[in-house]
Image (tube, rainbow, N blue to C red):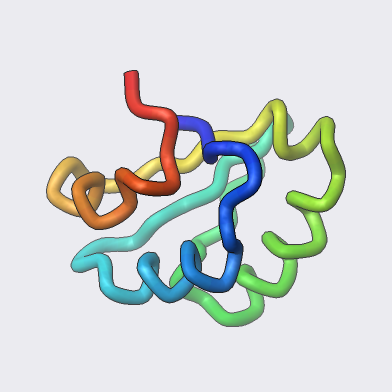
Length: 76
């Protein structure tokens, strides 16, 4: 799933912390950042400022956590 445009990143990361399972950002190069990790959150904020990274990355999470993140994701 892709992130919606113009979301509040702080609110999104706060919501990620409420998820039961891990939430990952996956880049086009197949790198994965666990967004529950503070270090990964710092990298995430820097990376998503780059338009090509934003356009070619996706968020993956367990189905039960999608409801918590639905406001921030482009769901199919």
